[in-house]
Structure formats: structure tokens, C-alpha cells
Image (cartoon, rainbow, N blue to C red):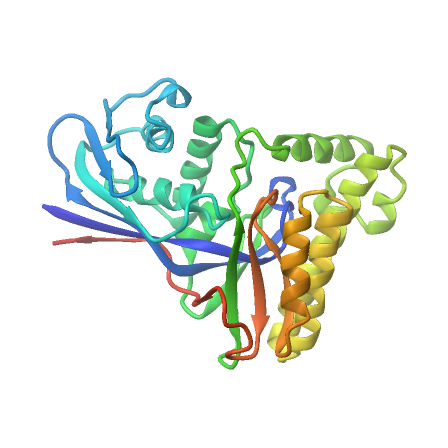
Length: 331
């Protein structure tokens, strides 16, 4: 039986660095895909890639996915290590999700691999498996946003995800706007300060309790200035996610855009995940007539910005559409 798997990338409209504290995020699956075509055959997993010179060839039991070579095979190995009974598979991977752009190319690969190897279950269970796979494969203690957005995407909608309750609420996107993604600078979270931010949030929670339930006033009571700043970002960002969804529902695109800019400023000033290059790109976008708002998106330290605009306002970047989640088709 020939199989074809499609797993979209994702862009986060608002709500970054909140998922690993059980907070709120608002991503959407986008019309850029990682695809795997192949057959369940043999007794190993063998994948070649259009973008990688070396194929991945692995047994059906992997103890240490982080040690896998070539490097892209770590994510395949992570999925295998988390599956109880993966099928053997031989296939080929292609993608038009730019690698290192912060659009979740690694999560899309994980979700696609899991489906190709026979995963059966809910989008949430698929996302949880692939989150564990990424954590084991990369060593980065990332949250569930990327995998869940990719697994549970709804066409025409962003997803408000409560990463504590693990609930997904589709938010209809207006038809008369464009969502533009601009790739600014290559980045990787492996070896970045991402894990430091997770640890700093853990320190904040030791001081004031779960950040998902904390108020901005409570965050301001933290004595350590660095930890206080991280907590102030998370608590204010959770509020912005709710306000952004409300603004979109009300058709108040100006308010939604202002919230995006506030989110970027918070990531820059309180969370220290932006860069001068990213700041300049956001400033250029926001200064363009017809742009409601813009912000850096994803884990930070480079990557992409996302903008909410009138149609045609920005002539550079990709216009992305919200699409359905990952699918497997037998042929």
C-alpha cells in the first residue's frame, strides 16, 4: 500500500513563550507542507529527503534518538522511540516549509513521520507523542503548541489553545485580511537561550505559583528583576491572546494589530528573545500603510515575523492561509 502524508507548518499569531507554562497561544496551521510518500515495508525505517544529502535508516526500536546521525534523523528517531509499535516504512520526504525559519519544520516532520509509521489516535495524542519526541531528540524543553497546531488545524481558523487544559478552540479568521509571513533570519533553538527562558519561568513559578493563573500585579512582586520580567511577559501575553481573539471576533482589526505590536515589544523588552534585525523588520512592516500590526513569531532569536494586513499592503513575504491539520492518504 502506497501512503502519502501531508503535515502543514504553523505560524503563531500571538502568544509566544506561554505554552510551556500551560498558558494560552493562538497559532494556525499554514498552507506549507512537509510530505512523505512511501510504503510500509521491510523491517526498518528508511527515509530519504530532497533537502538532505544523507538518508535516515533506523531500526524499529531506538533508545537514544539524540545520538542519531544525520542530524535531521534525530526527529525521526524521537518519534520511533515514543511509538509502542511503529510500522516499518520506506519513503521520501519533501517540504516547502523553510528550515530554521520558526515555522515548525521539525514538528511537521515529526507529525508526518508518526502518521507514516502507523500512529492512530486523536490529534491531541498525536501532538503529545511528537512533543515528547522533539524534547528527546533535540534536548529543547519546548511546549506543545507546534505539534498541536499542526495536528489539529482547522481550515480558515486560528486555534486558541489552552496549553494547561489542553483544549483547542477554533477562531474564525476574517476573509478581508491577509496574514503575511516574512523570513528574516535563520535560527535554531538547539543551543539557544530557549532552555534558559524555561528555567526562568520555573523560577517565577516557585516564587508566585503557576504563571497560567498569575496576574501581572502578582508577577511584579517577584524580587529577582530578570525572573520578574519573564513572568510579566507571560502573564501579559496570556491576556493578549484572549483580547486578540475577542478583537478578531468583533472585526476590530486595528485593536488586533495593536496587540501584536504590544506582544513583540514584550518579547523584546521583557523576554529578550528578539534581535535588532527582527525589531527593524517589525518596525518596517508596522510603518507600511494598510498593516494593522506585526510581531516576531515562534521561539525567537531570529526566524520570521507575521503581519496582519489589508490585502496587498505588503508586497514581500508569503501570504499564508489557515488550513486543516495533518492527514494520511492511502493509495
